[in-house]
Amino acid sequence: MIDIRRTILDALPRDLLLDLEDRLSAEAIKAYEVVKREFSLNRKRSRELEGQARFRLQEQGYEEVVQLHGGHLLVDGVMLNTDLKVFQPFARFSGPEIGVILGFAAMPEPRKIPPKNMSRAAGVTLNVSLQPDLLRDEKGPKPSDIFVLFLTARDRERAGMIEEIAIGVIGASYKDFIFYESLDKFLSGYAADPVAPDGPDESEESKKVVKLRQTRKVFIKPEKKPDADVDEGTGD
Image 1 (cartoon, rainbow, N blue to C red):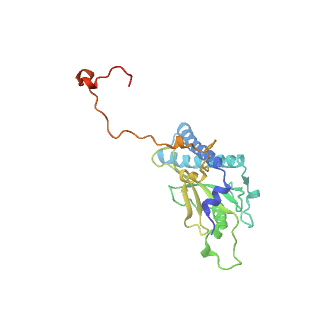
Image 2 (cartoon, rainbow, N blue to C red):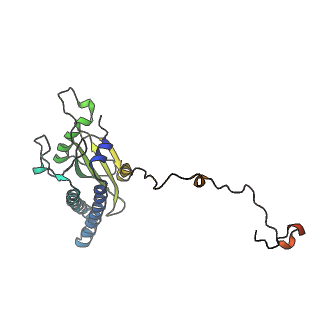
Image 3 (cartoon, one colour):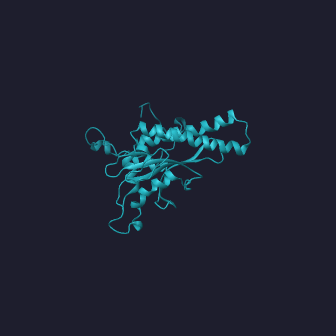
């Protein structure tokens, strides 16, 4: 069984995901500000127009960012090893063993499957290999590229804001996520290996533990001390 999380981490650069987060969040704000400034519409129409503008701006932003990070847009929009065409920008990233076809989609709300369209329906056909119950015999599909979505969900309380950004993989039947993680959680998978300290090993002296006194001596003013305890200026 494919380790989906590891496969995506190996194929997608961390900086790609960070740049997508910044760009798509900025496009959401831009869509809100443009509609608010340029159009005198009631609330319902404003939100509908904002949604359309937000998706188109984010889609173009996605396309530009993935190419800057070495993603290859599918030639003529054709899915690999199929005759299925897509009409949204999907980019391929090579991994050590398994490649990732990365797309973009907007969720109605966090963890909700994005609307099914021809492009996404074509994309998830690659994920049949991730679900062993769909493999009927040895002649069935074999593991190859997998289809992954960079997902955003608008903030329903704050106009122009994004409530959640996530990485998701939808099953071949397009009924549920077979992998889903918020972007913040997913990025923790890129944590760098611990860096060994420079120089020789710690000396025995540096390993000594400083211990605090278990009790404190109560301060007594010199004039109130017995004669034998009076400080005589020794600098103690």
